[in-house]
Image (cartoon, rainbow, N blue to C red):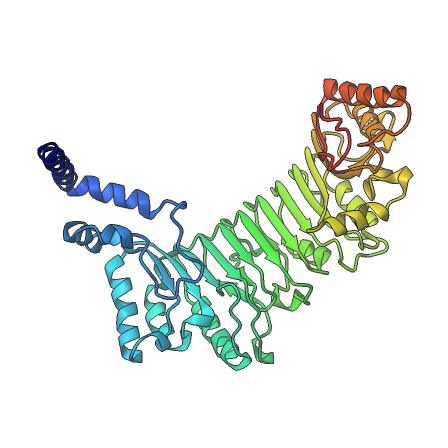
Length: 452
């Protein structure tokens, strides 16, 4: 028995040695391609709070010296740099600066993806090193690790450094993300901040203190690369941070505005003739009682996502006015922004049983000579809540409609306590609707379910 076990052990060792030899005999080019695939694989993310700037391929470099040498000598495997380790994590400031220089040196002249965790990096010290390499950044993220709160004084210092960084020319920058923190400003820092990034395609800011808008060129002022602009204002005044004149954005396809009272004002300074998708999450905004905005018609807008709120006031005329300027909408997603069951119940209890579609109840059904007055090309619709009868009416008045979904059911539509005949009528109604369009609604928590 011992001899058998010994033989099996030797066989296993030989197989393992052979496999290891075969792997290590792979050409360097093949291993480099494999490592690059792993390096760019989003399913192998960095830690959100990566204080030590651990390389994504650290587990590869621990296998053997040969593999580590391949990673060390491949500039493309050093182009994703996280700057999150400040001088407090090393013995001396000069050691930290030397380490930063080494990180950039390894990437040589290749385009960079740079993530700066602002409250964990001493940007005043690092900015001199960063300024040399920012012109080759393709992606730049300036953010704060979750749960980290810095002092007001340190944040003011870092705001100055952030401004200095963003003032650099970004010749190849395509994407910039700023957010996840609140900076404190000195008064002389307020005002429009324009990025010199002629090739920028994606811009997202979730702080009202830094809105790095793109620097337009020519007359009239225009930026010919930006395709996506996303902004979260946090309900702070933001107009003083935006350009004073209208900016022509001919390639902008998607615009997202959240938590701002300046929804209409922002639309006024953006000339977006080819905008295809608009997301508005401003349900609690101080809406106008009557809208007289001269906003030009958005003829190419095909998708509108609108988040309402149970406490929204004067929202209906604003939404109606927007829809009047978007005659070619094909997809309209209208949902209540809620994060708990209590908010859902509060949302439903506030609605009149006869107009449960909320703001849509009046004008989404309006017709002119049997043709829907608004959004006549509507194909896909998502509602906060509606009765089955209202869905039936939509199907009858909108022949182009292909799909309807409900965020919530109308109370009482999920459980029928009357006679079997009433229950059967509801079932037949849902079957009829589904014979005409794709129709989905929220599953019931309790009681009989009409999904079947």
